[in-house]
Length: 246
Ligand code: BV8
Ligand code: ZN
Image (cartoon, rainbow, N blue to C red):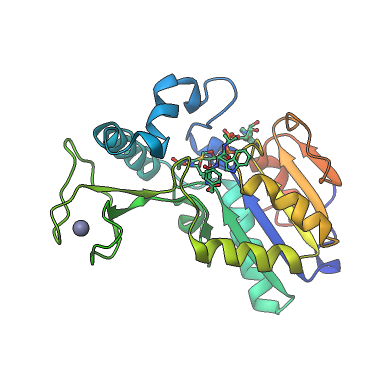
């Protein structure tokens, strides 16, 4: 496998999923042993079951916070951060990183900007949309559902659950980046969750070269991808992004 001719491209978009954090020991959602196999997770991750699921949500995210803090970024995260920094330094164009992950590992690998499509396990917000409390960084684990210091309503992890819309700002960034990119690389994602599942099609429609790096073929396959590199992102990305020493 040889590096991609990265300097043939000016605006690169990367989309990562749970597979990019697999080598860091964090579970993926689908596939053998995936988080979603625990039937309860689907109930907890569905916004329609709120507020009754808040105690379970806090149990789930308290554990995920701790696991993510105990984990460290791997060479896949490092290769992406390296590309972003190289591009920034030599003014080669833009690299925009979107992640579906909530584990914060891209940031810890040194990525200068990470657009977290599904929020962050390390942010907590009030359940009342009109509350004045600003969502805040929170690494705490909670035994019981915490109360908002501003209004007394329950607090929740600031992640996007199924049935909740993504942040407007993230959607706008995605719309612009996908329409102006000439290279799109999806890494470690099963491509089943919307709207991220549409990113490759939008990039392809904009004329971008579309590349998938994943342990296994997407099922069903996404015809929007021009090529795929099947294998471990932590092995493939340092070669593909031409930074073997990360
Ligand atoms: C929304 C919480 C408007 C945060 C998550 C249109 C059609 C059908 C359905 C819908 C639609 N529009 C909306 C929906 C509903 C829903 C949806 O997409 N459902 C799916 C299941 C069909 N989408 C939504 O609700 C979204 N909101 O669109 O709002 C709306 C609302 C309602 C109705 C209409 C419109 C909100 C989506 C966000 C949901 N939140 N989790 C958290 O705790 O993370 S989703 C969850 O899945 C995670 O966030 C995760 O990031 C995400 C995606 O999973 P992946 O990252 O791809 O991980 P996965 O395990 O699946 O795959 C990992 C891959 O890596 C595997 O392929 C594996 O082979 C590979 N791999 C493993 N190891 C490695 C590797 N690859 C490389 N190297 C390795 N070492
Ligand atoms: Zn409040």
